Length: 284
Length: 342
Image 1 (tube, each protein chain N blue to C red):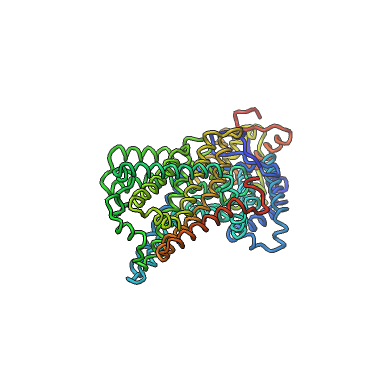
Image 2 (cartoon, one colour):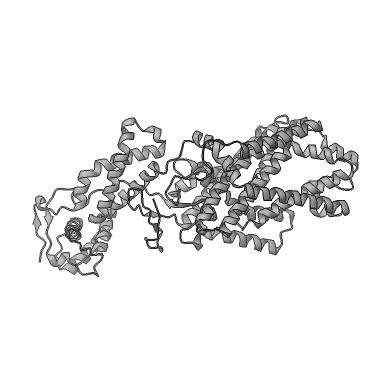
């Protein structure tokens, strides 16, 4: 259960070793998806607030007005401070916005995410977003917002808003203090087996044709086959045939999937004896 | 050269194919279980599934290791990576049930966090008292200071030029009974927001938090100066005590929480700056969450209690016992649980 700097820092992949000793290679949420998630949450909060306010105004009578006012104050407080915390304390560790953008909050040390950590990371939003915002709104409403104040608010927000871009782990100030980070949660179906899925006749390829490519090219070919775009398949098939000097037999897809199987088997045989050919530029 | 067709039996067999055939059923079962846990909770699993879960998780995890080393099927490796990650967070990252978290919060982590902050809390109390005394003395010697400390809207007539009678009325005003609950709700949310705010401000090396605490003290002292000049000092003390003991204590704790974060970042000691910030951040957040509860109590005492109880002695008694209660809960009473974070 540790994170370390083994993985290259330029990408958003991070080493994350489970107690069983396997590296899960977590991928951090990008700044764009984080911002998107926040905007979605913000929009939902605003919508709820507006809807509830309108409802209260509509429903309240003179004698019930104090009650609805009190309810509104408490509701506003809970919405503003509780929305993020309560959702992130749930089993998905994500607000609706984060869920839509495929993110979740995780403790950086791999331990369970505690309520204290969630509260800490969200209370920090108070100085990141709300402080300069409310400052600005208040002063603008009073007509006293001068250039200096506007500049100050913008600089303040700027420092905190862009804080995640200035550190390699995309940490918000709140993440930093709470010991959390935001990772991507992918979910995919188990894909079809490209090689063994159909029993049919196969092509064989000469050694010279299989020596052309390495793992990178193989996995690119896998992507082309899985995406199943007719023009991409035709182009790739033509390229491989041209390079390997093979004749066109009219069935691009079958040709490519046979070639994929043969190349995969050859490269995997290499792996067994410790030869990992990353790309076509390495010796096979 | 042509690529001759051969029989299916001779087709090359890659590791991914063998691997899928052997383990796909386990992966898919784990996938189904994890999906059910994500959608609902661990209680959605039957006993049989629950027993199978750790074994399935470990099988899939070792599949991932093997697939990474022996298989070149990228879609398969990605699938296993994602499945293992999801399973990991459901198994290791799973939350303690809410009721148990809440019980633990009240039984141990809240008082322990407040106890751990005792130095900072004491500092805040001293700062508040010091600022109050300073403001008191300043205004007694020159009443015009009042106007530079208290904004006009907040004073609402309670300034050095007010008569004793009008000041007395502000202390024992029981009009507007309908709005008591609303008033309490407003006070609570307003003060709680400030508590959260002073916690967050601690990140800026605690300075803004200290200023906030100082200003709070100045305001108290300023009002005392005005009321004491008209011989209403003790009456104001009782008026303030009924909720103020809880409220000012809560503000001091949330200030202390902010200061702890600022100090932990500025002077991390033996820890790395990052570890120091995280440790202080989580502990302070616990204390801060507690102050929100204290402020809810203070809001009720202020909004309802103070408006309905007009007797000075009663007000002082309630305020005093509230303070005693908090002190005993935080510092004297200890549950069997260990100190915070150990």
